[in-house]
Image 1: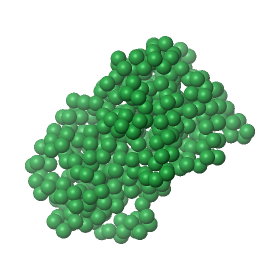
Image 2: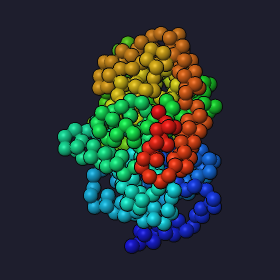
Image 3: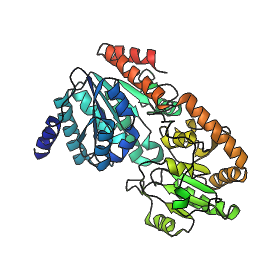
Image 4: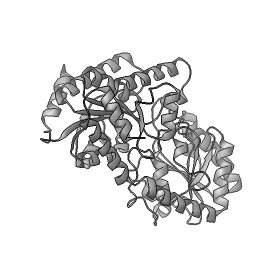
Length: 412
Protein backbone atom coordinates (compact mmCIF):
# COMPACT_ATOMS: atom_id res chain seq x y z
CA UNK A 1 0.00 0.00 0.00
CA UNK A 2 2.85 2.35 0.88
CA UNK A 3 4.59 1.72 -2.46
CA UNK A 4 1.34 2.53 -4.30
CA UNK A 5 1.11 5.85 -2.45
CA UNK A 6 4.72 6.70 -3.33
CA UNK A 7 4.03 5.87 -6.97
CA UNK A 8 0.96 8.14 -6.96
CA UNK A 9 2.93 11.07 -5.52
CA UNK A 10 5.64 10.53 -8.12
CA UNK A 11 3.15 10.81 -10.95
CA UNK A 12 1.17 13.74 -9.59
CA UNK A 13 4.35 15.78 -9.19
CA UNK A 14 5.08 15.56 -12.91
CA UNK A 15 2.51 16.90 -15.34
CA UNK A 16 1.77 15.53 -18.77
CA UNK A 17 2.03 17.70 -21.84
CA UNK A 18 -1.47 18.34 -23.24
CA UNK A 19 -2.17 17.18 -26.77
CA UNK A 20 0.73 14.77 -27.00
CA UNK A 21 0.45 11.04 -27.57
CA UNK A 22 1.66 9.34 -24.41
CA UNK A 23 4.13 6.45 -24.30
CA UNK A 24 5.73 4.48 -21.48
CA UNK A 25 9.25 3.20 -22.22
CA UNK A 26 10.40 0.59 -19.73
CA UNK A 27 13.57 -1.41 -19.01
CA UNK A 28 14.64 -3.59 -16.09
CA UNK A 29 17.75 -1.97 -14.63
CA UNK A 30 18.57 1.72 -14.26
CA UNK A 31 21.94 1.07 -15.97
CA UNK A 32 20.07 0.06 -19.13
CA UNK A 33 18.71 3.60 -19.37
CA UNK A 34 22.06 4.40 -20.99
CA UNK A 35 20.87 2.71 -24.19
CA UNK A 36 17.73 4.87 -24.18
CA UNK A 37 19.61 8.15 -24.42
CA UNK A 38 18.74 9.89 -27.66
CA UNK A 39 15.73 7.61 -28.19
CA UNK A 40 13.68 9.23 -25.42
CA UNK A 41 14.58 12.74 -26.53
CA UNK A 42 13.71 11.95 -30.15
CA UNK A 43 10.32 10.50 -29.22
CA UNK A 44 9.59 13.56 -27.11
CA UNK A 45 10.61 15.87 -29.96
CA UNK A 46 8.30 13.91 -32.30
CA UNK A 47 5.32 14.79 -30.12
CA UNK A 48 5.17 11.94 -27.62
CA UNK A 49 4.64 12.50 -23.91
CA UNK A 50 7.31 10.11 -22.63
CA UNK A 51 7.60 8.38 -19.26
CA UNK A 52 10.65 6.15 -18.69
CA UNK A 53 10.43 3.33 -16.14
CA UNK A 54 13.13 1.15 -14.58
CA UNK A 55 14.35 -0.08 -11.23
CA UNK A 56 15.47 2.76 -8.94
CA UNK A 57 18.91 4.19 -9.57
CA UNK A 58 20.88 7.28 -10.40
CA UNK A 59 20.99 6.55 -14.15
CA UNK A 60 17.18 6.53 -14.34
CA UNK A 61 17.02 10.01 -12.85
CA UNK A 62 19.98 11.31 -14.85
CA UNK A 63 18.66 9.94 -18.14
CA UNK A 64 15.19 11.38 -17.62
CA UNK A 65 16.65 14.80 -16.79
CA UNK A 66 19.00 14.77 -19.78
CA UNK A 67 16.29 13.62 -22.18
CA UNK A 68 13.62 15.97 -20.86
CA UNK A 69 11.12 13.24 -19.96
CA UNK A 70 9.41 11.95 -16.82
CA UNK A 71 10.65 8.97 -14.83
CA UNK A 72 9.06 6.46 -12.47
CA UNK A 73 11.08 3.95 -10.44
CA UNK A 74 9.61 0.48 -10.01
CA UNK A 75 11.83 -2.26 -8.52
CA UNK A 76 12.22 -5.11 -11.02
CA UNK A 77 14.52 -8.07 -10.37
CA UNK A 78 16.53 -9.63 -13.19
CA UNK A 79 16.43 -13.17 -11.78
CA UNK A 80 13.43 -15.47 -11.60
CA UNK A 81 11.76 -14.49 -8.30
CA UNK A 82 8.01 -15.23 -8.38
CA UNK A 83 6.94 -13.13 -5.36
CA UNK A 84 9.03 -10.09 -6.30
CA UNK A 85 7.95 -10.47 -9.94
CA UNK A 86 4.28 -10.50 -8.96
CA UNK A 87 4.76 -7.31 -6.92
CA UNK A 88 6.52 -5.65 -9.90
CA UNK A 89 3.68 -6.74 -12.19
CA UNK A 90 1.09 -5.16 -9.90
CA UNK A 91 3.09 -1.93 -9.70
CA UNK A 92 3.37 -1.78 -13.48
CA UNK A 93 -0.36 -2.49 -13.77
CA UNK A 94 -1.11 0.37 -11.36
CA UNK A 95 1.23 2.73 -13.21
CA UNK A 96 -0.33 1.96 -16.60
CA UNK A 97 -3.79 2.38 -15.12
CA UNK A 98 -2.92 5.86 -13.83
CA UNK A 99 -1.11 7.10 -16.94
CA UNK A 100 -3.39 5.42 -19.52
CA UNK A 101 -0.76 5.62 -22.28
CA UNK A 102 -1.61 5.36 -25.95
CA UNK A 103 1.44 3.11 -26.40
CA UNK A 104 4.04 1.21 -24.41
CA UNK A 105 7.51 0.03 -25.34
CA UNK A 106 9.11 -2.44 -22.94
CA UNK A 107 12.48 -4.10 -23.44
CA UNK A 108 15.07 -6.29 -21.69
CA UNK A 109 13.89 -9.76 -20.61
CA UNK A 110 12.17 -9.13 -17.26
CA UNK A 111 10.70 -5.68 -17.97
CA UNK A 112 9.72 -6.90 -21.43
CA UNK A 113 7.81 -9.83 -19.96
CA UNK A 114 6.18 -8.06 -17.01
CA UNK A 115 5.60 -4.78 -18.84
CA UNK A 116 3.90 -6.22 -21.89
CA UNK A 117 1.81 -8.52 -19.68
CA UNK A 118 0.68 -5.57 -17.54
CA UNK A 119 -0.07 -3.54 -20.68
CA UNK A 120 -2.09 -6.42 -22.12
CA UNK A 121 -4.07 -6.73 -18.88
CA UNK A 122 -4.80 -2.99 -19.12
CA UNK A 123 -5.57 -3.32 -22.85
CA UNK A 124 -3.18 -0.55 -23.87
CA UNK A 125 -4.09 0.24 -27.51
CA UNK A 126 -0.55 -0.16 -28.94
CA UNK A 127 1.93 -2.52 -27.27
CA UNK A 128 5.53 -2.81 -28.50
CA UNK A 129 8.06 -5.33 -27.20
CA UNK A 130 11.52 -4.04 -28.11
CA UNK A 131 13.64 -7.18 -28.46
CA UNK A 132 17.20 -6.17 -27.59
CA UNK A 133 18.60 -9.68 -27.32
CA UNK A 134 17.81 -13.22 -26.20
CA UNK A 135 19.21 -14.01 -22.77
CA UNK A 136 18.26 -17.66 -23.25
CA UNK A 137 21.01 -18.04 -25.85
CA UNK A 138 23.62 -18.18 -23.09
CA UNK A 139 21.45 -20.25 -20.74
CA UNK A 140 20.81 -24.00 -20.60
CA UNK A 141 18.60 -26.56 -18.97
CA UNK A 142 15.21 -25.86 -17.39
CA UNK A 143 15.96 -22.16 -17.06
CA UNK A 144 16.28 -21.87 -20.84
CA UNK A 145 12.76 -23.30 -21.23
CA UNK A 146 11.42 -20.76 -18.72
CA UNK A 147 13.11 -17.88 -20.51
CA UNK A 148 11.82 -19.03 -23.89
CA UNK A 149 8.29 -19.32 -22.51
CA UNK A 150 8.59 -15.78 -21.10
CA UNK A 151 9.78 -14.44 -24.47
CA UNK A 152 6.88 -16.10 -26.25
CA UNK A 153 4.37 -14.74 -23.77
CA UNK A 154 5.84 -11.23 -24.02
CA UNK A 155 5.56 -11.41 -27.81
CA UNK A 156 2.01 -12.71 -27.58
CA UNK A 157 1.02 -9.83 -25.30
CA UNK A 158 2.52 -7.28 -27.71
CA UNK A 159 1.05 -6.07 -30.97
CA UNK A 160 4.54 -5.62 -32.42
CA UNK A 161 7.94 -7.13 -31.57
CA UNK A 162 10.56 -4.69 -32.81
CA UNK A 163 13.84 -6.58 -33.31
CA UNK A 164 17.15 -4.82 -32.88
CA UNK A 165 18.99 -6.57 -35.72
CA UNK A 166 18.44 -8.81 -38.71
CA UNK A 167 20.02 -11.88 -37.15
CA UNK A 168 18.05 -11.35 -33.93
CA UNK A 169 14.81 -11.37 -35.89
CA UNK A 170 15.89 -14.56 -37.68
CA UNK A 171 16.77 -16.22 -34.38
CA UNK A 172 13.50 -15.15 -32.77
CA UNK A 173 11.62 -16.65 -35.72
CA UNK A 174 13.63 -19.87 -35.51
CA UNK A 175 12.87 -20.21 -31.78
CA UNK A 176 9.18 -19.54 -32.27
CA UNK A 177 9.19 -16.37 -30.17
CA UNK A 178 6.48 -15.04 -32.44
CA UNK A 179 5.14 -15.24 -36.00
CA UNK A 180 6.80 -13.35 -38.84
CA UNK A 181 3.79 -11.02 -39.01
CA UNK A 182 4.60 -9.75 -35.50
CA UNK A 183 8.43 -9.59 -35.67
CA UNK A 184 9.77 -6.51 -37.42
CA UNK A 185 13.06 -4.75 -38.22
CA UNK A 186 13.45 -1.04 -38.91
CA UNK A 187 16.06 -0.13 -41.50
CA UNK A 188 19.31 -1.97 -40.88
CA UNK A 189 18.64 -2.36 -37.16
CA UNK A 190 19.84 -0.61 -33.98
CA UNK A 191 17.57 1.06 -31.44
CA UNK A 192 19.35 4.42 -31.29
CA UNK A 193 21.93 4.73 -34.00
CA UNK A 194 25.03 6.80 -33.27
CA UNK A 195 25.70 10.48 -32.74
CA UNK A 196 28.37 10.65 -35.43
CA UNK A 197 29.16 14.30 -34.68
CA UNK A 198 30.18 13.26 -31.18
CA UNK A 199 31.66 9.84 -31.93
CA UNK A 200 34.31 10.80 -34.45
CA UNK A 201 38.06 10.38 -34.89
CA UNK A 202 40.27 12.74 -32.94
CA UNK A 203 42.83 13.16 -30.19
CA UNK A 204 42.48 11.90 -26.65
CA UNK A 205 44.25 12.54 -23.36
CA UNK A 206 43.37 9.07 -22.02
CA UNK A 207 46.78 7.55 -22.69
CA UNK A 208 48.52 10.38 -20.86
CA UNK A 209 46.02 10.22 -18.00
CA UNK A 210 46.46 6.45 -17.61
CA UNK A 211 50.21 6.70 -18.20
CA UNK A 212 50.11 4.49 -21.25
CA UNK A 213 53.05 5.00 -23.63
CA UNK A 214 51.94 6.89 -26.72
CA UNK A 215 53.48 4.22 -28.95
CA UNK A 216 51.94 1.30 -27.02
CA UNK A 217 49.32 -0.82 -28.76
CA UNK A 218 46.02 -0.64 -26.89
CA UNK A 219 43.33 -3.30 -27.15
CA UNK A 220 40.01 -2.02 -25.83
CA UNK A 221 36.75 -3.39 -24.50
CA UNK A 222 33.64 -1.33 -23.67
CA UNK A 223 30.65 -2.69 -21.77
CA UNK A 224 29.61 -4.63 -18.69
CA UNK A 225 32.39 -6.86 -17.40
CA UNK A 226 30.52 -10.18 -17.39
CA UNK A 227 30.77 -13.75 -18.61
CA UNK A 228 28.21 -13.25 -21.38
CA UNK A 229 30.32 -10.42 -22.81
CA UNK A 230 33.21 -12.88 -23.18
CA UNK A 231 35.50 -11.43 -20.51
CA UNK A 232 36.95 -14.82 -19.42
CA UNK A 233 38.00 -15.54 -23.01
CA UNK A 234 39.32 -12.00 -23.52
CA UNK A 235 41.56 -12.15 -20.44
CA UNK A 236 42.97 -15.50 -21.53
CA UNK A 237 43.44 -14.20 -25.07
CA UNK A 238 45.26 -11.11 -23.83
CA UNK A 239 48.01 -13.19 -22.26
CA UNK A 240 48.44 -14.84 -25.68
CA UNK A 241 48.50 -11.40 -27.33
CA UNK A 242 51.28 -10.31 -24.98
CA UNK A 243 53.45 -13.19 -26.19
CA UNK A 244 53.44 -11.60 -29.66
CA UNK A 245 52.96 -7.94 -28.69
CA UNK A 246 54.77 -7.61 -25.34
CA UNK A 247 54.18 -3.84 -25.13
CA UNK A 248 50.39 -4.12 -25.54
CA UNK A 249 47.82 -2.98 -22.97
CA UNK A 250 44.21 -4.03 -22.41
CA UNK A 251 41.82 -1.18 -21.60
CA UNK A 252 38.56 -2.32 -19.95
CA UNK A 253 35.96 0.45 -20.08
CA UNK A 254 33.03 -0.62 -17.94
CA UNK A 255 31.99 -1.96 -14.59
CA UNK A 256 31.85 -5.34 -12.88
CA UNK A 257 28.17 -6.21 -13.12
CA UNK A 258 26.68 -8.22 -10.26
CA UNK A 259 24.02 -9.99 -12.31
CA UNK A 260 23.59 -13.68 -12.95
CA UNK A 261 26.53 -13.72 -15.36
CA UNK A 262 28.93 -11.92 -13.02
CA UNK A 263 32.61 -12.78 -13.17
CA UNK A 264 34.00 -15.09 -10.49
CA UNK A 265 36.11 -13.50 -7.76
CA UNK A 266 39.21 -15.34 -9.01
CA UNK A 267 38.95 -13.68 -12.43
CA UNK A 268 38.27 -10.26 -10.94
CA UNK A 269 41.38 -10.62 -8.80
CA UNK A 270 43.37 -11.67 -11.85
CA UNK A 271 42.21 -8.51 -13.64
CA UNK A 272 43.04 -6.33 -10.62
CA UNK A 273 46.55 -7.78 -10.38
CA UNK A 274 47.44 -7.79 -14.08
CA UNK A 275 50.10 -5.14 -14.76
CA UNK A 276 48.98 -4.60 -18.37
CA UNK A 277 45.23 -4.29 -17.77
CA UNK A 278 43.72 -0.88 -17.11
CA UNK A 279 40.17 -0.59 -15.72
CA UNK A 280 38.07 2.55 -15.78
CA UNK A 281 34.84 1.52 -14.07
CA UNK A 282 31.69 3.22 -15.31
CA UNK A 283 32.29 6.23 -17.57
CA UNK A 284 29.59 8.61 -18.75
CA UNK A 285 31.26 9.20 -22.12
CA UNK A 286 33.41 6.48 -23.70
CA UNK A 287 34.54 8.65 -26.64
CA UNK A 288 38.04 9.55 -25.33
CA UNK A 289 38.63 5.88 -24.52
CA UNK A 290 37.71 4.73 -28.04
CA UNK A 291 40.15 7.28 -29.41
CA UNK A 292 42.89 5.78 -27.24
CA UNK A 293 42.41 2.28 -28.74
CA UNK A 294 44.09 0.65 -31.71
CA UNK A 295 41.41 -2.04 -31.90
CA UNK A 296 38.26 -2.79 -29.92
CA UNK A 297 37.19 -6.32 -29.01
CA UNK A 298 33.70 -7.49 -28.09
CA UNK A 299 33.94 -11.29 -27.62
CA UNK A 300 30.26 -11.57 -26.67
CA UNK A 301 28.08 -14.67 -26.53
CA UNK A 302 24.83 -12.86 -27.33
CA UNK A 303 23.64 -9.40 -28.34
CA UNK A 304 20.70 -7.62 -29.84
CA UNK A 305 22.78 -5.07 -31.70
CA UNK A 306 25.85 -3.78 -29.83
CA UNK A 307 25.89 0.00 -29.59
CA UNK A 308 29.55 -0.03 -28.55
CA UNK A 309 30.60 -1.53 -31.88
CA UNK A 310 28.82 1.24 -33.78
CA UNK A 311 30.35 3.88 -31.51
CA UNK A 312 33.84 2.47 -32.02
CA UNK A 313 33.24 2.26 -35.77
CA UNK A 314 32.06 5.88 -35.89
CA UNK A 315 35.25 6.84 -34.06
CA UNK A 316 37.28 5.12 -36.79
CA UNK A 317 38.33 2.07 -34.77
CA UNK A 318 38.31 -1.45 -36.30
CA UNK A 319 36.42 -4.02 -34.25
CA UNK A 320 36.86 -7.73 -33.54
CA UNK A 321 33.58 -9.30 -32.47
CA UNK A 322 31.83 -12.65 -32.69
CA UNK A 323 29.45 -14.46 -34.98
CA UNK A 324 26.88 -14.49 -32.19
CA UNK A 325 23.35 -13.27 -32.81
CA UNK A 326 23.28 -9.49 -33.12
CA UNK A 327 27.02 -8.94 -32.99
CA UNK A 328 27.55 -10.39 -36.46
CA UNK A 329 25.35 -7.62 -37.88
CA UNK A 330 27.57 -4.91 -36.42
CA UNK A 331 30.64 -5.58 -38.59
CA UNK A 332 31.15 -5.90 -42.34
CA UNK A 333 33.61 -8.85 -42.31
CA UNK A 334 37.12 -8.01 -43.52
CA UNK A 335 35.94 -4.47 -44.34
CA UNK A 336 35.12 -2.73 -41.04
CA UNK A 337 36.47 -5.42 -38.73
CA UNK A 338 36.80 -9.15 -38.13
CA UNK A 339 34.28 -11.77 -37.03
CA UNK A 340 35.29 -14.81 -34.99
CA UNK A 341 33.39 -17.67 -33.31
CA UNK A 342 32.48 -17.02 -29.66
CA UNK A 343 34.28 -18.84 -26.88
CA UNK A 344 37.74 -19.20 -28.43
CA UNK A 345 40.58 -17.21 -26.84
CA UNK A 346 42.94 -18.32 -29.61
CA UNK A 347 40.61 -16.82 -32.23
CA UNK A 348 40.48 -13.53 -30.32
CA UNK A 349 44.28 -13.40 -30.06
CA UNK A 350 44.80 -14.26 -33.74
CA UNK A 351 42.34 -11.62 -34.98
CA UNK A 352 43.69 -8.88 -32.71
CA UNK A 353 47.31 -9.63 -33.56
CA UNK A 354 46.52 -9.49 -37.29
CA UNK A 355 45.31 -5.92 -36.89
CA UNK A 356 48.02 -4.83 -34.47
CA UNK A 357 50.70 -6.18 -36.83
CA UNK A 358 49.24 -4.32 -39.83
CA UNK A 359 48.47 -0.72 -38.81
CA UNK A 360 47.67 0.32 -42.37
CA UNK A 361 45.02 -2.40 -42.69
CA UNK A 362 43.59 -1.36 -39.32
CA UNK A 363 43.49 2.27 -40.47
CA UNK A 364 41.62 1.33 -43.67
CA UNK A 365 39.14 -0.74 -41.69
CA UNK A 366 38.56 2.12 -39.27
CA UNK A 367 37.90 4.56 -42.12
CA UNK A 368 35.53 2.07 -43.79
CA UNK A 369 33.78 1.51 -40.47
CA UNK A 370 33.02 5.19 -40.03
CA UNK A 371 31.76 5.47 -43.63
CA UNK A 372 29.48 2.46 -43.07
CA UNK A 373 28.01 3.97 -39.91
CA UNK A 374 27.47 7.30 -41.66
CA UNK A 375 25.57 5.49 -44.41
CA UNK A 376 23.33 3.36 -42.20
CA UNK A 377 23.31 4.31 -38.51
CA UNK A 378 23.32 8.06 -37.97
CA UNK A 379 21.10 8.60 -34.93
CA UNK A 380 18.81 11.12 -36.61
CA UNK A 381 18.05 8.63 -39.39
CA UNK A 382 17.39 5.72 -37.01
CA UNK A 383 15.19 7.78 -34.70
CA UNK A 384 13.26 9.28 -37.62
CA UNK A 385 12.42 5.73 -38.67
CA UNK A 386 11.32 4.87 -35.14
CA UNK A 387 9.12 7.91 -34.52
CA UNK A 388 7.50 7.60 -37.98
CA UNK A 389 6.91 3.90 -37.36
CA UNK A 390 5.27 4.57 -33.99
CA UNK A 391 3.07 7.27 -35.50
CA UNK A 392 1.95 4.81 -38.18
CA UNK A 393 0.93 2.38 -35.43
CA UNK A 394 -1.06 5.12 -33.67
CA UNK A 395 -2.81 5.98 -36.94
CA UNK A 396 -3.97 2.39 -37.46
CA UNK A 397 -7.21 1.05 -35.92
CA UNK A 398 -6.66 -0.46 -32.48
CA UNK A 399 -6.75 -4.15 -33.31
CA UNK A 400 -4.04 -6.73 -33.95
CA UNK A 401 -4.63 -7.21 -37.67
CA UNK A 402 -4.69 -3.49 -38.44
CA UNK A 403 -1.60 -2.81 -36.34
CA UNK A 404 0.23 -5.78 -37.90
CA UNK A 405 -0.66 -4.52 -41.38
CA UNK A 406 0.57 -1.03 -40.54
CA UNK A 407 3.80 -2.42 -39.15
CA UNK A 408 4.28 -4.73 -42.12
CA UNK A 409 3.86 -1.90 -44.62
CA UNK A 410 6.36 0.33 -42.81
CA UNK A 411 9.03 -2.01 -41.47
CA UNK A 412 11.21 -4.76 -42.96
